[in-house]
Amino acid sequence: MAAGDPPRPMTRKDEADAPVVPAPSNVPTTPPQPVARAPQPRPAPAVTPTDGKKATGKLKKKQKKLLKDAHRPLDSWERYRALTDILDEAIDLVDLADHKARFALVIMGALNALMFIMASQTDVFDAIPVSWRPVMTAVVIIYALIAVYFVIQAIESLRPRKAQPQVRYASETGLEDFPVGLRFYEDILSRDLEAYRRAWRELRIGQLNAELAVQAHALAQINKAKYGALRRLYLILQVLTVMAVLLMCIGSYFVLSGKARRLDAKAAQQAQGSGSQLAEPQRFARVGVSEPSGVAYHAPTGHLFVVGDDGKLSEVDMNGKVVHSQSLPGNLEDVAVHTPSGDLVVLSELSSELIVYDPVARQERRRWRLDTDAVLGRSRGDRKEGFEGLAFRPDPSAPGGGTFYLTHQRKPSMVVAVAFDYDRPAGTLGADVVKARFDLDGYEDLTAVTWVPELDRLLVIADSADLLLVLRSDGSVEREVALPGKQQEGLAVDPQGNLWLADDKDKSLLKIERGLDALRSARSAPSEQGRGTGLRVPG
Image (cartoon, rainbow, N blue to C red; front, side, top):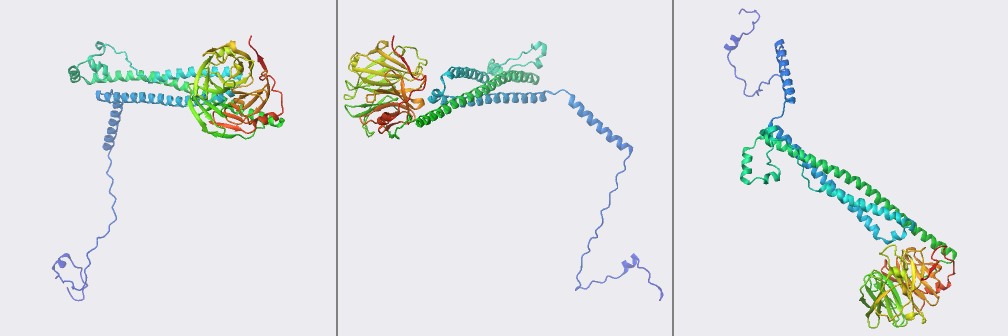
């Protein structure tokens, strides 16, 4: 190359021939960095008309296959799986129906428990007006009949069933599709063990599917019957629920309205000055009987004698302390003192007996049975009702030294005076001992009676109204006095003029200080018109 000529560019050969000059050791070397390149778009494949025809052909084949598969018949194993699913669903429906029937029984049990609790409260029956009682009785009878039908439907829904569908002969269906009976327990037991094993070895899938179809059909018939009974069961349950609610509402209404009327009557009596002027009672619990139902003052011992429904007789001093207690068989409702002999005469309601008891020897002497219908002079409206109150009025001119007074609780509400030879042996007392009958139809729950010589009056408790009735000698009601307590079933007067009440619900004796003085000072007022003014005598 001549001087002054411009340098020519270096060729690859010159680069190869050039000497390699080593890099200085003190100069750091930097590795070459990769050069980032932008991604290059890949060219789309060219679509030719032939490729489009191929894709369209594949799509049509797939659609044709799906369409053909949707309309083809099931194969044997698909039928088997489908039939077992149907059987499982049918069995689930059977179990569901049984659970629903049991749940209906639980609801019915709760309703009946409420009805029983309501029926066990005597206040409900006492509060129902006499004119309403036939209607309420009819409704209760209808409820009971429907409840019985409910139980029948529950049994119908829960009882085991067997359904046998109609199966054609094997010659009409072919052995391949004829059920051979290998699943139902009765069919299984119709063969011995070896024959049953051989039948499974020779079984075809078509025969098994046919048997599954028969079982599915049988379960469908069972479910149809069970759910039919279940529909009737719940329809009856709805009716009974409505009836139970109505009965409870009506009963509650009469109870509450009756209490309101009694409160109004007490307020009106107090406003008129003829109400109760009785002092607040003193309460004695634990008097030797669990449910005090009668009390009497025994002058020879100076003690009170208390009887209870539990068949207990208890002797209590005037401070409420138990002196002696013993059992006396019977449903004891009241006790009276036969003044001439000093004996106690105890009234047993359920057996309708008068029991003579010696309080000194502390033993029973004899019993007289009361012919209740003959003593009342009519048939009782309710055979469960009986005499609940007993008192004795001394009278030397009367047989036995006096007259016994019996109060019949209700249906009819009546006080009966009887007199008989006290020394007569045990036996039956009938209409021949009756001296007088006093109808008190306007009152309910006559639970106690006592004779008060200082007033020359009979005192009778009308428990449902919490009233003390003051009766004249002819049986007419002179006045009404409001009584404290919850369920007064016994009444006595001691020599100091204190009133003693046996309260069955409160399980106690109530002592009303100077109660006799309060009755003396109370102004006499005419009884309510039409209530307890009727006098009937034998013959």
